[in-house]
Image (cartoon, rainbow, N blue to C red):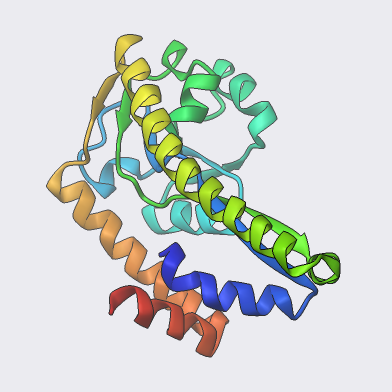
Length: 207
């Protein structure tokens, strides 16, 4: 997806005076819960942590109760029982010691957030050509290294959840199918908003 979307993202950011140097992914998003989640229907009625428009839309589609909680307040929300399900990475789950309150983690790999490193275009263009080339080479190496490190850390964080007694498992066939249907709806809605750029990205991804 990054390879498919990078040209469009780079073009739009360049119009704003920025150059994309490299992107590194966070660990994939999974579902934490204090009960077994075997199908989408099991999420109905649960207090579901939301932190942006997309997670709020997911809560709406699965008929969960959305509760807006920033990352800094997540541990407190867990401790007070404000939420009983959330979608986040194994890394965040590890950081907040989610096993103190929840026993299940479903490695759905729903999406993979990314950090993108940018540079001011005018500043880049002021560099001499050898320095520009050096910056781009270093950026390419950093991206390759970052993706490998992210994979290694994802494996480590997931193993730590299991080591703390959580039941870590892939989603059931029913849950995976339900999530795929939600993904299709979210994609369709995003395409309406993003127009031709969005369509080009999806076609490049699927092609």
